Image (cartoon, rainbow, N blue to C red; front, side, top):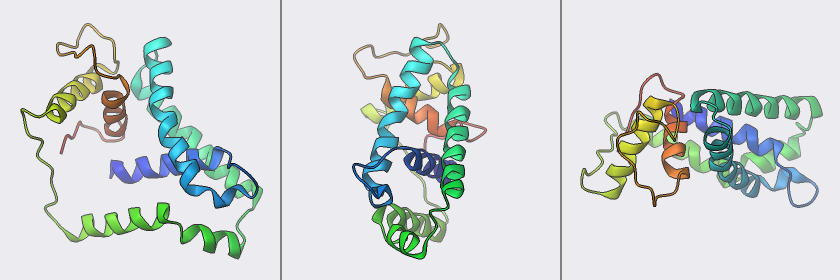
Length: 167
């Protein structure tokens, strides 16, 4: 269920990001993309530069996303035309289709290949998740040349669960 919560957090953040021009409700794809791009920058600045725990940053991000939905309600931009044009946008349709497939297939799993780089990234992301920080003495596995954003994004998505899930 963490993927659903992550999606709503990104959608709430997308509400807060401006569109290129007015009316901004027509820019859902762009705004959602900006919200996704904000996450690694937010995590890097908050965790690596300011030293805040990833769990605190994740739940603060979720609170900001809730504020985004609050902004939507306060502005009362729920007109039939806005809702109809927004509901037909692929950023809302495609995740619903993916959720329908995931709910239909009972045993939908992903098993990372241990020798693959993805397996290495997942191992590092698990350590970041357990240490609640990117730079920590608790980490025994580090690829200095890799970008910091990917393992932190994987850890960010797992913080919504009570345990780390790599499949």
